[in-house]
Image (cartoon, rainbow, N blue to C red; front, side):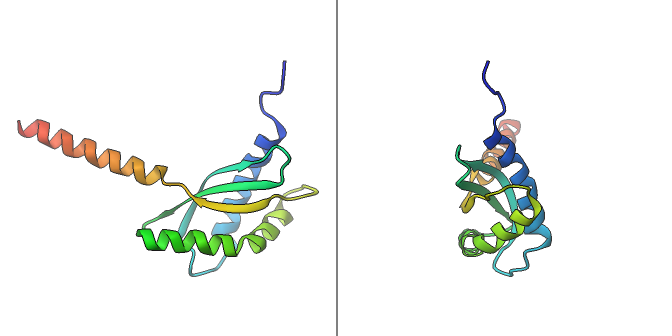
Length: 121
């Protein structure tokens, strides 16, 4: 029977926790809004970490600017996370915007509107 929870998944989980801490407490850049780390996907060889984030309480232009700023600050953020994790090699960080939160809010709004229409009829 193979491993059900491999090394890359364990590293992803720990990296997500450390990233959340670093972004909240140690990164002081005004270009980054209120960022939430939704998911971290680390490649099998641990070379690349795809980090999916959501920027709350922001319009589309602020979201784009926040992700751009995160990618510019990726080496510094990587260094801060590396100090907190006990790994010989830390993955290269690549930040992406995760629009699943926005999609969920939009679906919830549509369901509420539909419920109001059904009550009126």
